[in-house]
Length: 187
Image (tube, rainbow, N blue to C red; front, side, top):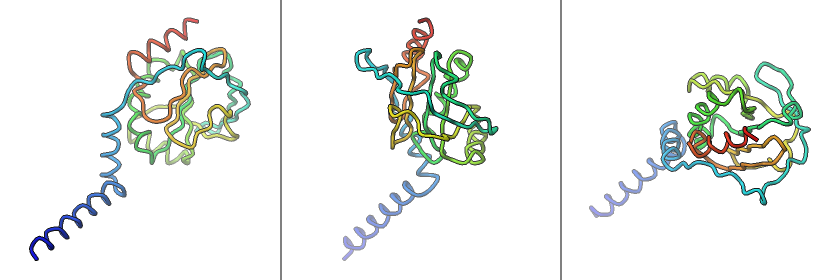
């Protein structure tokens, strides 16, 4: 009888732990920390496997209400990150994205695209002490950048080649990624 009560107690404790992990801020915090532990630098796509962006006809709006077209950035290196405030892997990579943005904001176009309302996204950025330029999509992104998973990040070179297509968390501030960006900036 004692083992039966002990087993029931352990099962209840396990269910409580799972519920905390899945449905509370503590769970989100733990998921973010786990993602940060297992993150790697993103890899660029081999030249023969790179896709060319099929269109620059993608309309966005920034947090101030200004409409922006991807066409405006043609011929520049473009860094596009799809994210959300409720996404632990997105939250996990934000500090590395901020560091990269701080150093490359005048050399690379950064578009952080969210479906969250701007009020919610700005509140999140303030809380996390982030200053990333956020956008919402007004039209569908180019087919080569459609993903049902976030975070999804794409880097497009000056010729329109998708040189990075990373689904999931990455260390965007790694030395190896910075070296690749520097190489593409020199071209």
